[in-house]
Length: 227
Image 1: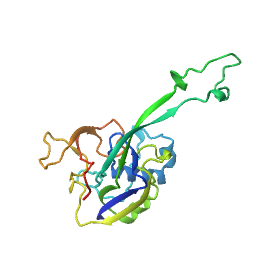
Image 2: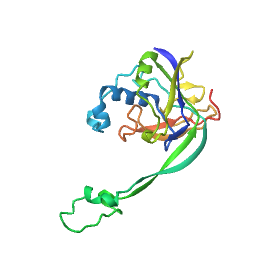
Image 3: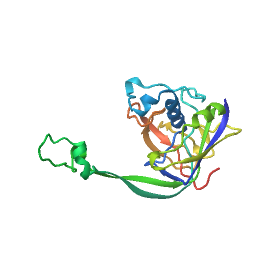
Image 4: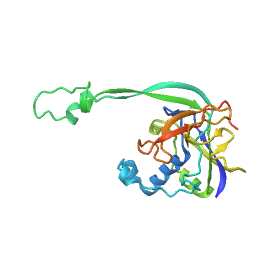
């Protein structure tokens, strides 16, 4: 296991993310699931009582957490774009059975409700991550990761290239940007000149679950420049 810096070189810098927080262990866990349990992952059949623990090429700390940082980047702009969902009225008869009677599709509520959903798009630099792990194993998993953030199928967060470099120090906990990953909040913020937020978070992937969340210090991921 070596100290590593991982850089995601983005195609055009557009990422779809409401909070701008990207966890490298979550990215690798997704890739591992895609390689080893694609049906459970893609069919969204994983629940709290049947979660699969991934076997990642990463070191663990004394608490059993993967030794990885969050992603750091320069943010140049934010914009709001929308995705839409609306039934095709011309072909409604193909999708809806009115049982031989006249009927009307209600697009204001229910199964066929129309949506116009806002999504926050960030224009950012390449993303830097740090970890302690096996570079060959990480490289093998990253071949499955083509996008970062949400709505990758729409072209957001496209990764042009992953770069893996060995570095001298372990920057998965404390590093050039202060706190380098989410950490349980013990009642006092570090006095290191950085700006932090407090938010309830899980301490391991999948981070989107609402169980086992604890108050955490959130790293300052948006930088004026990268180290």
